[in-house]
Amino acid sequence: MKRRQLMGYAGAGLVTALVTTIGSHTEANAQSGGLSVQWLGHTCFLISGGGVKILANPFRTVGCTARYRAPKVSANLVLISSQLLDEGAVEDLPGNPKLVYEAGVYEFQGIKFQGISTDHDRKGGRQFGKNTAWSWQQGGINILHLGGIAAPISLEQKILMGRPDVLFIPVGGSAKAYNAQEAKQAIDVLNPKLVIPTHYRTQAADANACDISPLDDFLNLVQGITVRRSNSDTISITANKLPEDKVIQVLSYKF
Image: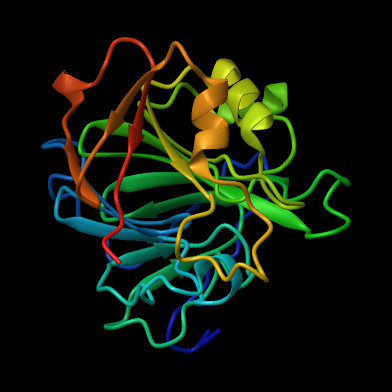
């Protein structure tokens, strides 16, 4: 990673009172006006609102992401869940975005972020290390991106995560992320309003180098929850139009 170009800010562990201010402090309108959410493939999303563009988990195009387009889009801030190939590829991103990749509390242009450390595998982090789940409010909406979480959510983590309005959650399994059953259990714990599945097999996958399951494995397990399918990779979300009960929102990727 080009640390000289994309500055990383070290956090202070799972529970911290430290607030690291990233760049200049500008309130703008970051806490009102809703969001635009664009799916760039896998666990990567561009979340725009309040004059701020946040890019989560840009990836390299290999394995399960082989036929996605490289997510080299302009953003003000880049959030990284881990430094694995599918969650932490920041080379050649346009402009000079700030990069945050460790658990801790941060502030950027009036938005406070909580990076929450979780295990990236089912072996206490001994296989793939730690994953950082990111929680913040933007456009008046509480967002939680779980990255590549694979371990159950502890009580302490749940307190830090709160109840998300919008939850980005991996559902495709493998050794380093939730499978369908684990995702369902986490959704029951967090009780989000809108669920956006991530980390599942699509036609982007190299058939010989991808070990994650398709989305339907998850959708078949959560029958009874409303599923909305968009024919676009982008949706708009406003606080006053969030569902009262859980809804699963599936975005489309244009190959």
